[in-house]
Length: 63
Image 1 (spheres, one colour):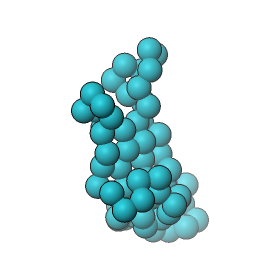
Image 2: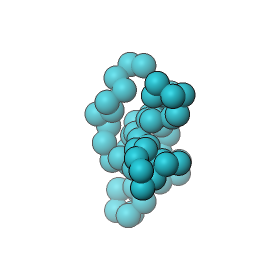
Image 3: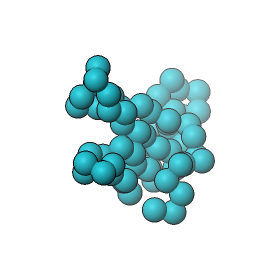
Image 4: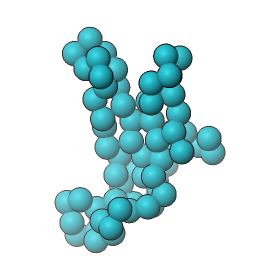
């Protein structure tokens, strides 16, 4: 599940898997679901990926 901006660039997505990182004691721990976003600006014209690996409250809602 992903969403795009007005230019067709991916700006966010929700993952419904922990990618094998289900150990809560690990620094790579992921909740299910979790989300990612990509921010585009002058410094990051190709986008900068931001991880929200332990946030089950996704801003994409039911999209």
